[in-house]
Amino acid sequence: MAAGRGSRYGALKQFDGLGPFDEFLMEFSIYDALENGFDHIVVVTQKDNVKFLKEYLSARIPGATKLDVVAQEVKDLPDGVSYTGERTKPWGTAHAVWSARKVIDGPFSVINADDYYGKQAFKNAAKFVAGDSDPNAFGLVAYTLKDTLSPYGSVSRGVCKQDGNSLVSVEERTQIEEGEKGISDADSDTKFSGEELVSMNFWVCKPIIFDQIEEDIRSFFKEEENLEKGEVYLPFVIQAMLQQGKTKVEVIPSESMWFGVTYANDKETAMAQLKTMTSEGQYRSPLWK
Image (cartoon, rainbow, N blue to C red; front, side, top):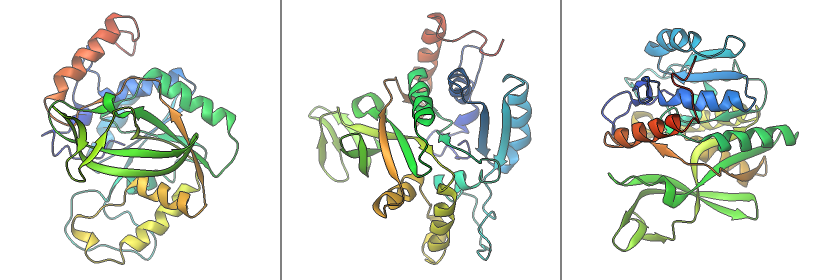
């Protein structure tokens, strides 16, 4: 998903050259996915970026890889639903996934373009897909909370509640940061040990989710107050399916490093991490030889 507007970052961070040869952060995720058996890349972006991204990625990724670049558009809505107002911000992460409904017909993973997820995370996701034939079973590749914080400000995290390996719920905490007294969420005053597993929006989904998203979009548009700034969030859609018994979700430990670029100051850290991993031989340089 690369359709965000980078409001806290101050630019379109999805297209910032962070790799040693100015590679986008998403290119490292694409590389790791292909290395672990994924063979179809779908990028969801703003309409103005479709042509650029299609040309840019087509010139880099292996020719045998199927590539689709689709636009997340405000006017792309279910039949019978319309919007005539003025709005530039997309309708949220669930709508972004729904925007790709015409090019996906099997199990798929969802990630953010502005996060680094790690090689092992993709290996574990691929193993889950290969070993699970239930069309209603989803997966959540989860990360340890203490490893997902930013030193430059608070972060929003979905904290996992589990029953064994099964996801019970994801509790959204919107102002988590580490201070002198430990890790806490300023909004709810919840304290954390740091060992909790959290969602970084790396989901393994099945096509049944498109029908649920469409249903949720229709419900969303029935509430007038949603239309100015509201969004339809992917974790909320999946949690609703979970509570209704429409799916089960396995929590898959990522066993990987995560880092992202929420704030502009995160850029330097991300660039240093990518440079180190490349110098250690984890990635080729340039990435696409």
